Length: 133
Image 1 (cartoon, rainbow, N blue to C red):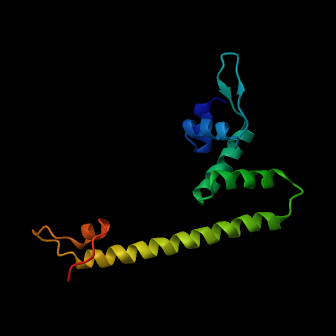
Image 2 (cartoon, one colour; image 1 turned 120 degrees about the vertical axis):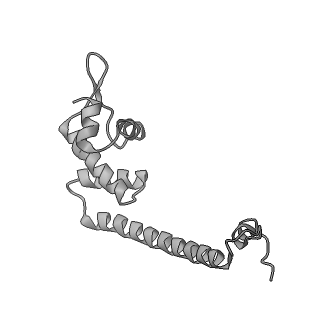
Image 3 (tube, rainbow, N blue to C red; image 1 turned 180 degrees about the horizontal axis):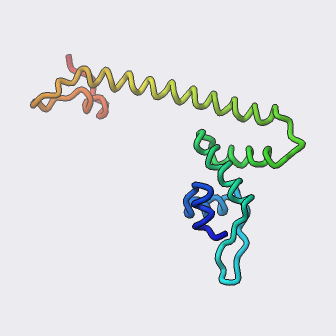
């Protein structure tokens, strides 16, 4: 099937499919006599796997590792679990960072009068100015 049909069936845009080929997540497509990319149903399944992993926030590098583990029928599930747990810890760190940012912005927003006057604690903080009492 061509790249357009592959994109439709996998839910992955054609541009992204070409990128995944470029970075080696999927093998380079076979070319037709007219030099069009030709993909298999296996490629569609792989693209769905990649899309799901990316949707869970795995990096392209981690997706490559997960694909290698998926293809290795002799793998130990412990290796897969280790990758997942590392990713969970990274997500938890990011959540903590986002909560901290939210608290900071909430406090700055609370202190901003939001009126016609130009003084604004939000902009002062972004500029690195100390708060004036």
